[in-house]
Image 1 (cartoon, rainbow, N blue to C red):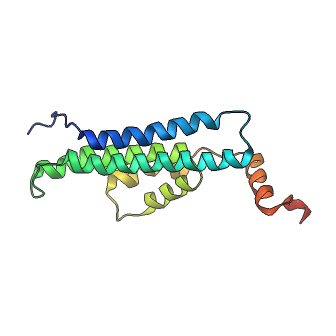
Image 2 (image 1 turned 135 degrees about the vertical axis):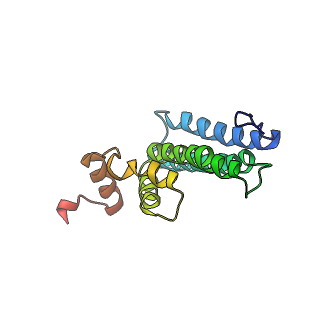
Length: 156
């Protein structure tokens, strides 16, 4: 088996991934409408973020399963491919998810980056979330606090 062999995903798995992606894109497009109320927008945003996460993790699981298919776990080729290809590719995919979804996802990525029990490709890739995360403007933080607390925190 050569390193450059391209594995084709089964049709059923492809359909599932495409369906999840299309759902996320459709909801994301509807999220941009000016006439959608704020509560619906927040719910839609949650669905988009969740769809993005589900499709990312489904693709990662499929990547592990099918990239390593047919290789003996005791072989050097298995360990090399696992480390150099699958772990690194999956870590980059999860980093992109964290940066796109922001908030809790960045915190979860920071937690994984701090763990030494995960493969080195994960903590080295996700460590960029520790000190290179996109900062959030205080105005946005203040709006969230006001919406959750019901009033401006300076009035409390």
